[in-house]
Length: 241
Image (cartoon, rainbow, N blue to C red; front, top):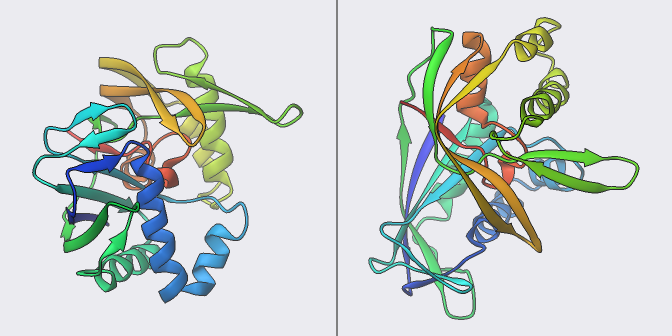
């Protein structure tokens, strides 16, 4: 399920680390309305099978701020899990018209929550565009250090596939999912590398338009739950062209 959440802001100025602020809203609503699910998702290192992106209309960037003249933003949310979809729809709906403090000077109010139809993919090749940057992280368990790659790097696909296998095999999609992941191919059409600030990190990420070849099942999973690492933190949301 895909949701479109229209929000009104009390100020033209919005924090540059806006993903953290949206995560704060999600956690606020979930902790209040679904404390057991909140504890399961955020009380331990649980895989987040959802993604989101934030759209600002003609933003300008100034130091640690984004200036938004029309004082609105749109949160796009997506998940392929039916139970989780209901939870998030209810969370955003119950927070509607509530003044949510983002910073000392900025409040956010959810104006509307809309369910957006998504085409079911039946082919094994599609084109997509990124709605939020794709993160490909190589995490070293020994040193606990992270390296980040873009789809322009030679090592990227190997790491992306490895992360996908770790993520999806754990969800019991069956033994065939690993082979489906190994066979995935991504071809950049309009590739752009961008560095994104997230907490105290500067992360190399991928934006743009791509052609992807994979099984229809895997393509639907990626469209619904996002692609890459940190999808639950507002990265890796894609839209079929």
